[in-house]
Image (cartoon, rainbow, N blue to C red; front, side, top):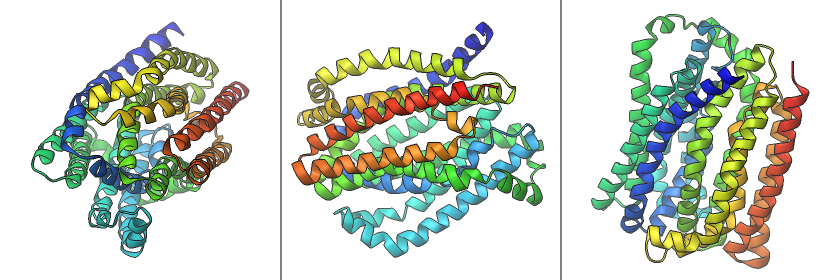
Length: 420
């Protein structure tokens, strides 16, 4: 176990170190961005990302997760090829959906100028899907250094693109283009590395095995993709409902608040989560218990999260106005209300692949349905009965905190019950 722990920590640190640099850069430029872009421009960008992400999360029908599972490289590379094919199909489908429903979508969001930018979504969807697939290929092959390098590369491109295009008065389009170009170039970096390191693997790709892998891992598009879509829809529906019920600049404040709070969550959570998924999958495949790994991971995350988010909740309005500039204390008030929600998300998200490892995707999907329904219901209650965005966010935060606690106990139970 000591050997495992040292290896686990080293691999987490490899990804975390790259992620730390990747998060420090946007954190440092954030005060500049809030002085270049208006809350309304951030709101438009948040709406674009929310719509795009609904497609991106299912761009590969979640087959990219299956890249981790086969025992042979031959089968894994055919799943990679399958993921690329489905990404292309998904991007084409998004074009059709935007053409048919685009006007209705922007009307619901009270932002008709958004329609002009939605046509960039299919490109973001295509390259994001292929990037995700290659990221899991790197993870399977334990190329944690490459994952860290690419994360830094992508963040630098996005952050400095935001600044450059902001000074050039591109407005919200600058945020969108920076995001898109960073995604494309990050994919190309992975692709060049793949071609250089895995030329022999490319020759193993064939139509027969692509079809076989599509059938063998069909639970991913049938169950996990719908599950993942609903999880992302949870994030998007918050933006959609806030856009519908409240002021447009409130959406901009909320989007930056959520982004700043989720930055450390994504940094440490994703680093631990990727290594946890790879290691726990290997342990379970070898017939070993994953319960101890789960308990230690959750315990360490809680030790880190609770004091940090407690202090943040106390001083958020003051900190946000000092950091982001005059007028941004409203974002800090929002941060205070959603801190419990984000804290429990930070603790739970790194181990959220437990149901995938243990074949509990169907039950996990039911949990996801319940959680996302609670979010929608909470916002509707706050909006309809109180007509106050702060109360809406507070209700969501309380409801989701209770939900995550229940989910945590379920993770502990199934990881214990399914010991081999």
